Image (tube, rainbow, N blue to C red; front, side):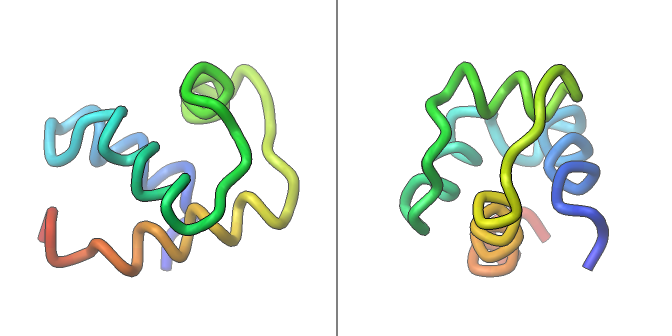
Length: 68
């Protein structure tokens, strides 16, 4: 899989998924970041720890059919 941040950026940029929905997938899989922190991460203003990066990757994998 691509870097989860890059894939998430492309999905949001290309309107394949909204930022809020992507964040909801992430939170639903156990992610810790709030919406603003998550958005800052996507736009490379902050970073997430290794656990949250794995959660984002799982969320993208689990919902791949939604945007493919």
